[in-house]
Amino acid sequence: MGDNRDFKGNDGYPDVPESYYVFDSTVQNSKLVGVGDLVVVRNREIALGTAWVEAVDVEPDVPKVRYRCPECKRIATKERKFEKPRYLCQRCRLLFDERESETITVTRYTARYGATWRGLDGALTVRQLRAIAENKSTQQAISPLRVTALQALLEATAAPLPPEVPADAPRELPAGRGEALVKVRKGQPAFRKALLQRDGLNCAITGKCPAEALQAAHLRAFAVHEKHDTAEGLLLRADIHVLFDRGLMAVNPTTLEVVIMPALRAYPAYRELEGLVLGVREVSREALRAHYKKTVGVD
Image (cartoon, rainbow, N blue to C red):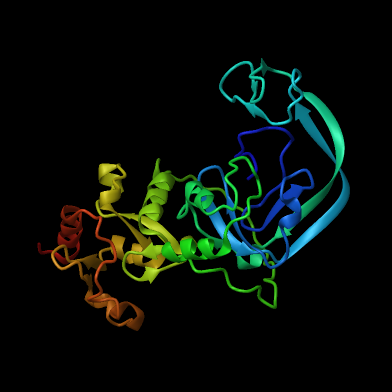
């Protein structure tokens, strides 16, 4: 989506991945997208999310600028962001800095699906999606998938199908903006993506969980070690992550059972978690033991 494309044959589209996708009549398979379709939105590497199409807006006679190779006139030319000349023609292999342009008239479509959006955040890869595509083209912006295979793939990653469109659309609430200075953990998004690809949409303690609520937790304090090791990482629901980091919850490294501190036993939802077996096996027992000792005070 958006700027995450290999080929620059036009000026792009104003996409908002979790709400709507914009395309036009020059895009192959553009007429196949309809209300009620199950879609997966992706970039070049990963699936961003899935949803049901709620509406498709149609705008006829929209001007569009297209760019061509000056030699062979091919539309899809690859931009080389860090090399000169700037563009490479995939057909004739010409290198050049200036593209030829033309303005055409197209029908523009906007597929809207925000009310049923379910984030995947990389739990599925583009390679997995291509394996269930109805054709093997790697260049199509819109590629039909085998629905039953997609449903099975979502099931295997613990990603539930999006719900039906709610009768009442969500209301917009007033909001503001402020400024803050924060420290950013380098590599944290990649660490989370690696855990999502390992464990799917599963909290290591509570089980199936929407991507939006899953966080990448370190068994050893990142502030001390400043490294991302998936063997020392767990995907945890946001509230579980907070309790885990604050020493109110741990995992017995021998039995892999969840242990909660007395302060949590007053809350039924957390009390019920005690004794559950950790849902992940690819985790360092040594790191679990270090966290357990720090929390409980014994080995």
